[in-house]
Length: 282
Image (cartoon, rainbow, N blue to C red; front, side):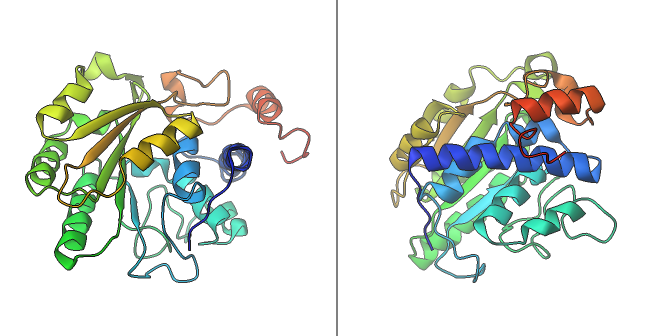
């Protein structure tokens, strides 16, 4: 099943997902809030902008496209999108990270419908995606494969092995999106290992590279359309420039909010900025 909304509808979904992420965090007591908020527009575009083919009633439909969240610590945002898309019940989000819940801090492909790969050990999601894209190519199918990476995990060697292999195999069904929020855990990316010139590194490995504002839904749609399947073509990379903690002013671009719970005063401010206070939801 393919879902596609107009821009107003997509922006409304993005706002709703951002609210869901924050509400779930406050109800359940923990999670990676900053990395989840930076990818909201990307997930909105993929799941509700007509990019991914999927059927929540048949998550294993062989005709589906594959989406792999390599930065698995942002599972809270993925669960919010999967609930909105109908893969899981929205009420189940209240069990996020609670004992016995299948909605763990990192996604589990064996437990959660719609999760294509268990991720969390960083730098392995792209290799999963490369395998899926190679299988699709060998099978002669039109399954699109998209992996969402964190910029920090691109410091690891496994990423570049996968990049080199996929370019050599001409995996034109593969698109990688990098959530380029310039922060890594509790510091700036540049203070840990600088990655510039980032796009040129991928080009040197044989990838076609696009760069967009990762919170601009029309720009994301255009980039994903330009990166659509080109069998036997080069794999595509979309560098999505984002803001960690996007949507909550005191979290935006602040490394501390990689994983932290807001206090009561901060909850009130965030609820106002996310328009949750009008819902009386906190």
